[in-house]
Length: 87
Image (cartoon, rainbow, N blue to C red; front, side):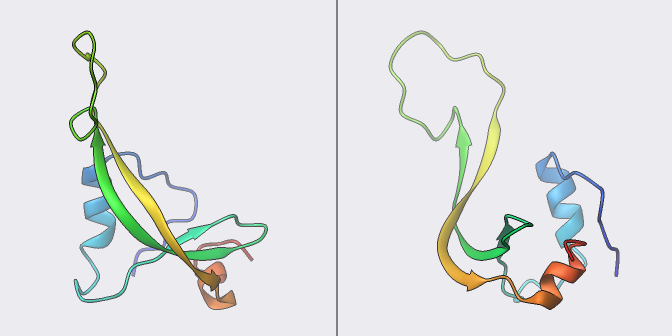
């Protein structure tokens, strides 16, 4: 298993590479707030400007993929905080 403590995942390719070692049926959660760790489901994936309704001049911003946080599941388990290097 590869542990990524100080790495930044900044592109879709880096995210895919980080996830490809895991079984695709494994549940996925979003861990937030290292000082008060919470666990959320993911709600949506969107890309701007492609998925946004926009009226006006042609958009020239580069595309960005967004992962939206969904419902809060609860507090992040201590084991997960430890695996993320937050403890």
